[in-house]
Length: 141
Picture 1 (cartoon, rainbow, N blue to C red):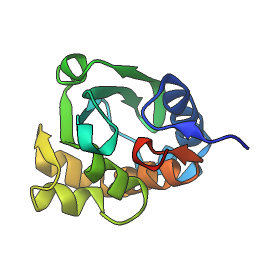
Picture 2: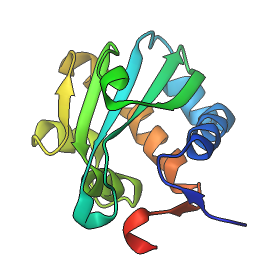
Picture 3: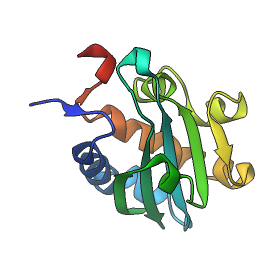
Picture 4: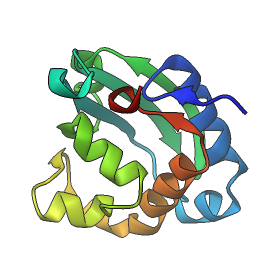
């Protein structure tokens, strides 16, 4: 199976499909009704020259839409999580738990932390979903 380029439109589609295949997410995401923007900050030295955003329309245990957008557009979501590219790579490779990362300030959160914490299981399962995608990371090309 060919690897999917990280943070590409194909990645967004595969991520949405994985989330919607997950019975764990369907259960853990019940009651969630906000948009989430992931801002992936540029790291030119890691072959990631410009910031990108991932827009996620998540509702009640379902991913209604996931798209790669501009970092500015991702920043307009109800919840926004920002980090440099290499930090997101750590999350996707199970080296950093996203909730712990937010609490440690390694991932910057704009939005209500107690709400995010209530949905820790859902965010962990979303991270699991990214590990099921065969991703080509730009700094490994």
